[in-house]
Length: 420
Image 1 (cartoon, rainbow, N blue to C red):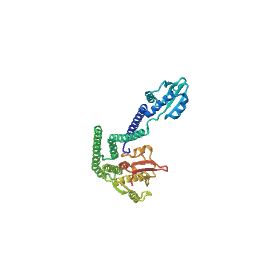
Image 2 (spheres, rainbow, N blue to C red; image 1 turned 30 degrees about the vertical axis):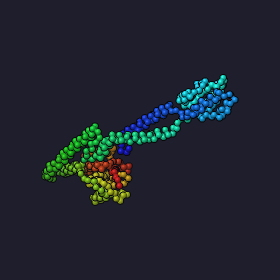
Image 3 (cartoon, rainbow, N blue to C red; image 1 turned 90 degrees about the vertical axis):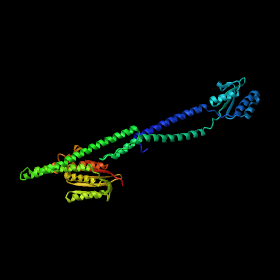
Image 4 (cartoon, helix red, strand yellow; image 1 turned 180 degrees about the horizontal axis):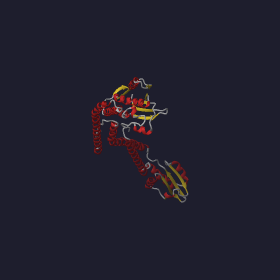
């Protein structure tokens, strides 16, 4: 059942409930038919004894009746004498064998009043047992269990067959989720399902081509801009004595940085780096040491001595480096904390800056976005650092969130799935 989708489980439960209701209705119908047609078990000798008893009472004098009733006891019977018939509906002048069987068939018991003489009626009430129903109930119960097992397997098989292509689609979409390099979905199921999967694969291929073309165009433009930018820098050197020279060189430097960051962005997006095992603690410690060598206020603490993680080490190093640099540039410091949980690891990077407004938190991950205040030209940057970091984290099936700290500053929380 765990392999079925939620809709498939509901369908399966509905089928089982419907089948159980049908079986229950069938059992009630069978029980009714059985009860209507069942016959009491009355041996012919017992019927003969009833007729003989009635004959003796009618043929012998009243003084012998008590002796006859004592010596000729009838099984499952209650016999009385009365002045009027107790059973008015079955008051008979004489009693014959066919009448006895007919009464037993109709009422499942014998209730009859037989005329003996004027002012005297013989009342016989016989309640013979029905056939032993335990064996019948055991047989029906056994058949019911077998039928339920068969229905369980048949319904599960049918639902699984119908659900398998959908499950394949879901698993394939989960696999390619947040991946730049998509893979085709296996074509399985009936003709309609195969057609859907083919359409999805074709759509994937079209989107992939569109993204590849976009990447090639932006990469080519960024690369080609370097040549005129170099010429512009050389020509600007002739203006070194002019007051505007410093501003021109600052603009050129900013353009060079934007081109470099753009090329790095598309290079990361199309990276085919393989997953490998590395020590996350060692990587963050190395980034902290690199920043400390440049006299930045960066601290790293964790309760974990060593944490082996499977991922693309160069990309993750780039992502965390961008986040640390972001905290240093705009928050004057970076406090890094690593925690390990059962199925994920969490890295928080806090700074002492002014934080962000709610609106900015939604925009900072957009390419080339820079805030109006803290993220200004004076601090440098192109607005691609957080964009690259987020895409790398998402490519590892992780999440990245921003929150303003109560004591001031911004906190970046990175959560990555982890299996020890």
